[in-house]
Length: 222
Ligand code: AMP
Image (cartoon, rainbow, N blue to C red; front, side, top):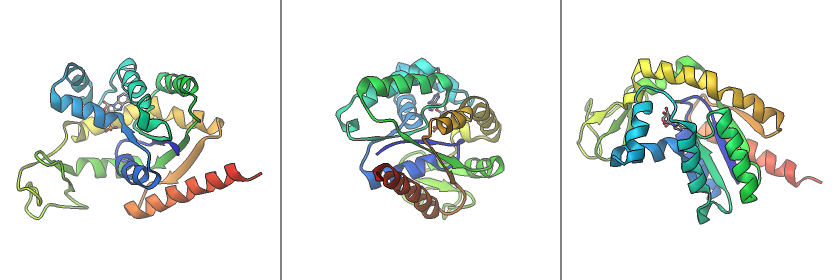
């Protein structure tokens, strides 16, 4: 399975990507996660990336393209991959297309998760994470038993710097301007499946799976 998940920040790409990667046994490549690990470790890459991430801007193309190129050449990506949060710009799409051609890897199916802006702001602004164990919470949809304290390990919950409302608005603007045009591009390539991203996690997962299975059937048809 060769898959790209597209969608605005807060569309549920990360959650769906984890479930899909497990179901189809492919590695999940999340550029956001890779960058956050580098930021937490304080590496030179992390220090550079943090200045962009904290204000809701995109990390420069050459940085993320390099990360994805290194990751796609690892042996576990030979039989498939799931890209989550990449590509996000026209330059990234072009680099990815070239990379896949060079590696002799099939073109991906692109799933676009469709969620309106107000819903995205509601989801992201309420997101909290345990600073010690990383357990996710949400003030509205999945509150901690004791406000601000992790149910699992008792440490403090924090809000991601880029989940503050002003930064969310900026990230959405960046999405509209730089990433949304990729939907049209992949549509003309015949690679796009659009999925309604509203509702329970399980419902959205079922919608995506049925689209993917439909595609496999179509590809298999004479
Ligand atoms: P995410 O967790 O995917 O929302 O990514 C968090 C932040 O990491 C983004 O707001 C960007 O600053 C950065 N980032 C992640 N993926 C990319 C990408 N493909 N291109 C540029 N910046 C990225």
